[in-house]
Amino acid sequence: MIISQKYRDAETEIEFAGLDKLRQLDKSNRIFLVDKNVFNLYREYFPENSILFESEEENKNLQSVGEIINSLLEKKIDKSFNLTGVGGGITTDISGFTAAIYKRGIKCEFIPTSLIAMCDAAIGGKNGVNSGGFKNQAGTVRHPAKVLIITEFLQTLPEKEFAGGLAEIVKIFSLNSEENFEFLEKSDFTELKNTGIIETILNNAISAKYKYRQAG
Ligand SMILES: NC(=O)c1ccc[n+]([C@@H]2O[C@H](COP(=O)([O-])OP(=O)(O)OC[C@H]3O[C@@H](n4cnc5c(N)ncnc54)[C@H](O)[C@@H]3O)[C@@H](O)[C@H]2O)c1
Image (cartoon, rainbow, N blue to C red; front, side, top):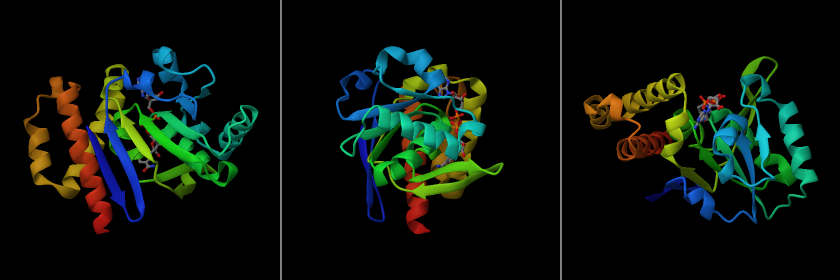
């Protein structure tokens, strides 16, 4: 399933796919910035030259951005490349921010692997890094060209992180749609990670988030 979402003058293609899609992606014009935990679980899907990032709030800062930029330079990444951020919201935020400033901006796309990143952090174009002990003090608003959502990643997401993502979805629906709220209420929570159900919920949450922003 592919949906195209437009916000002001920016268009993002949002695609729901299976893990196999990762094997089909053209690797010649992509450099992957991957959450280290995700890389360790799914390493066969990522090229060897992937840049690994330890997803901790204390690493979501300008120093890490500088280190990532140096890795991109060492790997001779030029403006023809797409920076593909793979991981939870910390990794998609730092990927989007780095892509926005590296060589004055290269294309970026996200493959979110946590529920929060799928419904929120990878959606809407905001990318922040922490500074001075405060969250998201520096950032950019720049939409990714593509968000590839592979809900199979949720099978390995710790339960606590999954619950945090569900809370975010409830928040998005509470701002926006009684109908979506009812769908969520009626869903069997033990079956929520089942691809069909979670894709429908995410699709509704993403559409709701875009609708809310368009109206604002
Ligand atoms: N830009 C935005 O609009 C926006 C919106 C919401 C949140 N955020 C940001 O997102 C961050 C929180 O995101 P998060 O909760 O995804 O945190 P996170 O990126 O730290 O991921 C949570 C944990 O889950 C692990 N993980 C992720 N995917 C996994 C998988 N498939 N299998 C196993 N482990 C996996 C990570 O390694 C990490 O330990 C915050 O920094 C917040 O500021 C940004």
